Length: 253
Image (cartoon, rainbow, N blue to C red; front, side, top):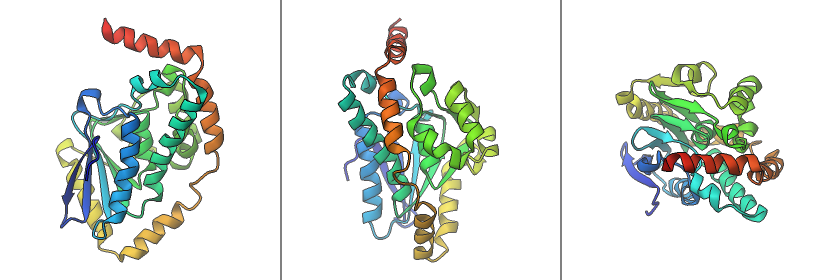
């Protein structure tokens, strides 16, 4: 299978796919190819009869730093922005609608889309050096998927705080607000994710899969169209364009 932005391994008698986001030089930032590959990853896992779990983690010191700013610079028209945002939502939603269990093994920085993958996954385990944030407000945007799903997972107050401040929280704080369900030492992270997969695997598979489908049955369209339109407009503001320009200028200096 060819998914360029992921390194794919099979474990646990081929029942577990370990998918490592493999752009460490970019802190695993998410470009368009990533979102296409994330959808392809879920399709691959669901098409393999023996696979019942997908563990997503990151290469290097980041889980994912979020959206790739180089992609932002390419979005120059409202139609292009809408298409990109629909792709982003489809990618995150693919984790929710997948038949397999999806576990986020957060090994480091999980900003923006990295934090949103954590929310979209069925379970999330973090290492002690993980950090979480919605950084979109710092570049004139909002976490479009996060503001829809965040209130269901971490509550309205914490969603507001993260979305409106851009501040970072550590793994223990993430555990306290139910963004993650377990915290481990870095060297134990993947073992903890595989152990969780093994506990789930002890149960009848169709009971597990149908439980996920029923829990996620209402996580479809409501609010997504409005979020796409609002976020698309933010992409066209001077605030956003100035902040992105400042980012690239600072990196060059």
